[in-house]
Structures are given as C-alpha cells and as structure tokens.
Length: 289
Image (tube, rainbow, N blue to C red; front, side):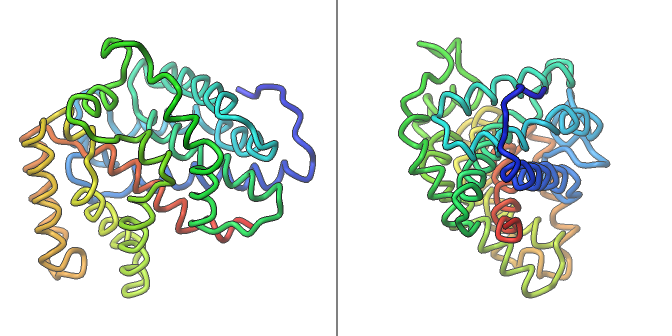
C-alpha cells in the first residue's frame, strides 16, 4: 500500500522502527489470553464474526501503514494528510477481513502516535510518553475535533461515534485530541506498577486492561450493552482491581469468570483494548530513539 511518497533517508529507518513497534503492540494486545469478552488466540469472546485469525489477517494488511504514517509525520503534516492515510489503511483492513472491523480504532490511535513519534524523531527530540502524547494534542487535536465525523446525521457515523453522540461521551476522537489522558493517567501507571512488581508482562497487560475498563466510557460497551452494560463492566473491573487484581493468587480464575459473564451479556470492551495497545506503545516508545 505504499503511496510513493519520498522519505529522506535519515527518516526512513526511524519510521520503520516506529511502525514495526506499533504493529508489535497490536499483536501483544490480541495475543493476550486473559481479556473479558474480547478475542484471544483461544476464544472469540463476545464476537461471532471474528476470531484470532481475523486479527492476524488484519495486522498483515496494516504492515505498511504504520511505518508510512510515521514517515509522513517526519514532514509535520496536517491532519488531512494523516486522515487520508488512515482511510486508505481502513480500506485495506476491510478487504483483508471480508468487511469486519478489527482495527479501526488502532488505525486512528496508533496512527496518530506513530506520526507524532515521526515528528519527534525528525526533530531529534527525545521520544517519551508525555511528549509524544502532547505532540498529538498540539499538532492535530483541534483539527481532528473539527473534522467531519462521517456524516451530517447518525447514518454516516461509526458505532462508536453514534453512541458517543447518544450518551454524551467523548469517545476515541476526544481521547486522542486530548493527548490520550486515559492511557497516560490510568493504563500506563497500572502497567508499569505491576511490571516493576512482578516482572511479568502478561500480568501487567491484564492489570492495565482492567484499569482502563474500570475507568473509560468505552463506546463499544455502550453500543453492545447501553448505559447499564457499561456500568456493569466498570463495576466488574473495579471489583477485580479492589480484590488485588493480577496480584491476587486466584486472578486467572476470576478473569475467566468475568469473561464468561461478559460473553453471556455480549459485552466487549473494544475501546479499552485499543487503549491497551496505546499503553503498550507509550510504555516502550522511549526505547525507539
């Protein structure tokens, strides 16, 4: 899906490194086994139309997108240029998955972060979570909020955009425009704390996911379960954390019980999963340059 854009040699290697890391973060998110209501290597979660292989096909279709949008960021583009790349990536994803939306949120969220990391790399700035998020907010926040959301009425909106309008929540666009405050203030501290305590990435990833589910107004949960479904998911995640989270001896069994409950209610915290991938990107971005 290469666009034919010429990228200065000095930017090509950082852009490839940034893009490959973003793809690796997405793989880690879907490969995580203990995720309530979400697709894992062994479960469809609450989904009937996708499984782990669907996500792998989707990831394969995006292998050029993340390096390309990072390279685009090196030229300090406007939001329109990034949006064009994202639309093209979404078309490739839907072709690979037979029309199933697996990574629309990641195309948006991680695409912006890759572009911001490209800006930083081109300016020889230190890559740090706070500075990369600030670049997203300061460079494109106002433009993405002002851009059309897909139509003049609900008919042209995504599921997440529809429920954001109906329930008065910000959704993915507001989260990105603000510089990913949920990932910075919730997901990343939870991940780092458990990783420092245990040295176990799996447990750190699971803890971060549950912290995000407990905190975020996840539009995927609103779409599937309404306000009551969102409230139930938040309570379940908060209770898991209050009882020790992944530091409790029986944490895997408790996650499995919450997963069974979510599946019975058809709840899927896809927005929180997207923010887990963002959290993983931020946790490792400092090692990229």
